[in-house]
Every structure is written in C-alpha cells, then in structure tokens.
Image 1 (cartoon, protein in one colour):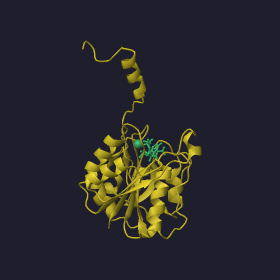
Image 2 (tube, protein in one colour):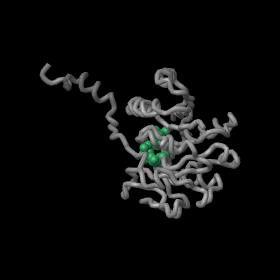
Image 3 (cartoon, protein in one colour):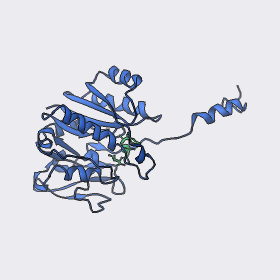
Image 4 (cartoon, protein in one colour):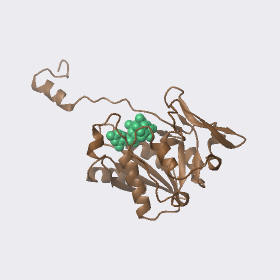
Length: 243
Ligand code: UGA
Ligand code: MN
C-alpha cells in the first residue's frame, strides 16, 4: 500500500528549510505520495518548483486557514490543510493506502514508514518530545492498547498527538462523516471519534509502543521583520561592523 503523507505547511521564513529537511527523509521512503497542503491562498510556482525538484510523487494543495480563525488564540493550526487533504482523498475515491498526518517540523525515523504501512484500521505509537512528560503514547498490555499516557488528557477519549497514529483508507471510507473540526487541542480526538474507532481495534506499533519513531521537534522561530534591518541601513547604522 501507498502511504499518503499529509503535510500541513505555512509561509514563514522556516518553511523552505523545514520542507527540504522533510523531503530528504521522504526521499528514502518507497511508495509514498506526499500531500503538501499550504496555508496560502494559491499554489504558487515557487513551491511547485521546489516540490518538483525533490522528485517525490506529490500533490500541492492550497488550503488557507479561514480568515475568521486567524485571530483566534490558539488558532487551529494545520486544520484547514488536513481538511483539504481529506477532501482530496474523498474526491479521488482513494480506498487503497494508508493515511498519516506528518507536520512539516517533526522528525521521522525511517522505520516509522514500514511500521505504519501495514495498518489495517488504525495503528498507534508513541511520539517523543510532547509537553511535560516528553512522550505521549498508548499503554499496551498483552499486545493490546489499554490506556494512554499524555501530559494533557483534558477529557479526550483519544489523548494522542497528530503524529501518533495512521489510518487505513479502506477503513476510513466506511465513515462518510470523517471530519477534523476547527477545535484547537481536540483535532486528533474528534477526528478519531469520527471514524468509529474502538480501543480493541487499535494496532500498537513500534515494539508494542515501546519505541519512539517520531518526535515533535520544533524549530526555534525568530520573527524579526526584515524591514528593521533595512531601516538600520537607511539610518546608516549598518550591522557590517568596521567595513
Ligand atoms: C501540535 C501538534 O503536533 C499538531 O499536530 C497540531 O496541529 C498543533 O499542535 C495544534 O493543533 O495546534 P505544534 O508544533 O504546536 O503542533 O504546531 P505547528 O507545528 O506550529 O503547526 C502544526 C502544523 O500546522 C504544521 O505542519 C504547520 O506547518 C501547520 N500550520 C501552522 C499551518 O498550516 N498554519 C499555521 O498558521 C500554523
Ligand atoms: Mn510542530
């Protein structure tokens, strides 16, 4: 089966390096289709050229966050993107393959891909570097998922991270109301609730969820506007030292 790797991404100055690093992981993975959903109002040529150059089979989607959510705090990050990918999968009637939500800034061990490829319904596994406990993932007893360890359970039935599960498309197609609502913090839970999952059906991966094969890494961002640097030059206070 093909892995449909859904990557929400958005324009900021770390975007190209993040996508380059991720592409260089995905280049090692056979039978993958990369769904790159950009939080931007059009599919720009520069992004197309970049994605083409990597040589990974891909689809570039334009999936801007609806304007009304931009100012809400916290904003629903990556939700418009994942919804667009779900819609694309539905439109193309894809029922053969495995869906995985892989953010542009996470770190993926190549073994993750062979672990998720055989997903029959929904597979789950731990994610490293999540909040206070530094790991979030299923608790497994006798080969079955029996509970979850997560720093922020918050009444969720499925207290897991977006990167901690994969879904078989044939299974997902049985649930026409599959959805990911714009509800920050509850995206995973409500998505998994929308595909009628039962705890007994979960397939634990990564040596019965004892191995971490994906990390929620975050790139330190700096939001200094370029205009400030220009202003320094205009003011004659250049950063070039003793030149
Ligand atoms: C955590 C989870 O790991 C995400 O899966 C979840 O979507 C997110 O929280 C959330 O719901 O807020 P986190 O590292 O905090 O992720 O968030 P980001 O990595 O900044 O954003 C998640 C994804 O959405 C990324 O792929 C990012 O490129 C994308 N994004 C972020 C947008 O498309 N638009 C934005 O304005 C911000
Ligand atoms: Mn992230």
